[in-house]
Length: 570
Image (cartoon, rainbow, N blue to C red):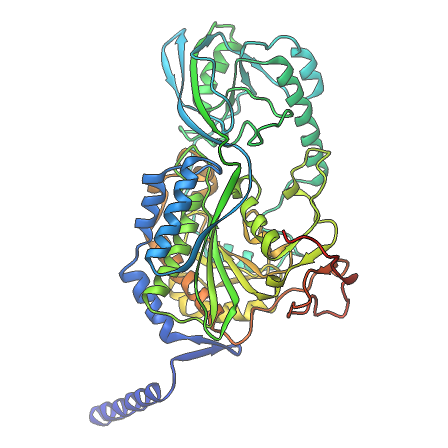
């Protein structure tokens, strides 16, 4: 047994040697050969946790500005404020980039109440881009089910001027346990496991989508001909939560979408009316909606700003989220959270006086909710484009498989990576590598200093449903973080409960710190982020011979590579 005196002396000697080594060596750690600047990580953590401004940013976007429907005055306020705030923090080249959209819309006043056989205010909200009622509408509602062509024929000529309750009542079950969920080790392990390229977000079967769109066209024609006074639909939420989105068209001259005042109603209130009607009890409703359309500016906007790079300033690392939201709540978890996290990340880096090698560019997108419109417009204008797909079958272009040649622009080779935050208000638990195997060891090294914060999973799975897809779809590395789900899909996603109170301060602070670290490391590493090869059958057109990065680094070359014909500058 070693003596106490000798033990203390031995410990002191070991500590002294460790301190000497720490002074002699830079604060850089390496995992799988990927260097990590631990000194800077420490500084980012200190600034992010001790002097965070993320909740102030969130309050500004949600409490003061409010819901930010694409094309609305509130969305423009958000564009202007974020640009000004980023400038105040010291970012440069802050500006708004426009892209063609359509009409703006906002709700000014709306209510629905039952006047017989009882009097009651009913929880309901108008759908976006639906018109005002012709003053106060009073009448006896009619409940209909319109799911087949036979249903349309059954009610043809019977709905003009009616208040239409559209849809059957569904079963409402009690909530047996708390809605808020965090990923445990078992679920994170499942996310880690690759599943044959299947996305975390799986869209409906293509044939089923085609069937739905075909019937939707028939239903729209039917409603345009019938001209009901108003439509009321049951919300998929319960307990006063409405999931409300669009019921009209943001395209001014669209003649294929009905222009009918439409409401989403709380399922319990919808059920009361439905049961009375099913029993043959006369019901009378009173409702009004006052909405305003905006045709003065057909453009929508993305907010862009930069921290300039140094020796690699012509290369760019991007980060962002979407600034637009639906109108039922104040767009807190979807997606003021992502914008505030991205803004806080660049604020942290500016506060630390970081001089990145690559330029860091933040982008706050518009039009995500209508089909990733803002990010797709940015990619089309700056990076790469394909011919616009035909829409003869009514399917939106963002749901179509990419077709036609891919024209690469000079900036395509200069974007190292884009990091996105848009899965609610939960903290970061890892990142989806989007089938990019070469990115996994890099991300694992970057996450290692944040294991104590619960972030340790790098999944090769691809995830969808948000703006990183615009980049990934043209071969530019685009990534979305893995986040705790909390109550995102059950309570806040596109609902009237998507408000500031559903945000978690600790989660937002943690996410901001990790976002700042990822962006910093990507901006400082010697090489750009590795890229996946484009599919072998992709026809590639180079818009400029100055492209520096190979199109595909695989044994199977792209189908053809040819110079672009001379065109006017877009």
